[in-house]
Amino acid sequence: MHHEHEAVIERFKRYYADYRAAGDPDSSFASAYEALIYSVLDEVGQLAEEGRLEPIRGRIRELNEIRMSIGGSNDSVKERFEAELRERAAAVR
Image (cartoon, rainbow, N blue to C red):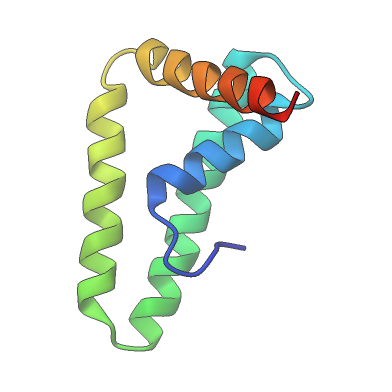
């Protein structure tokens, strides 16, 4: 289930944090990315049923930006997610 008006990258970060709670960075990243693709497909399908083309374009554009930032290696994106998790954990303390 996606949060209303949540940016795709924020959804990816949320999924990563959820998977990371129980797994290592590599498998968590792969699982979060897979879950993200399925959730965006579900969302786009619903938007298509509603005839809402602009939000579909926006979601696809956001997803393409993520794909391009991952490129051949997801290390920099994964490192950024890990840093954000550490910052959040430190802020909770």
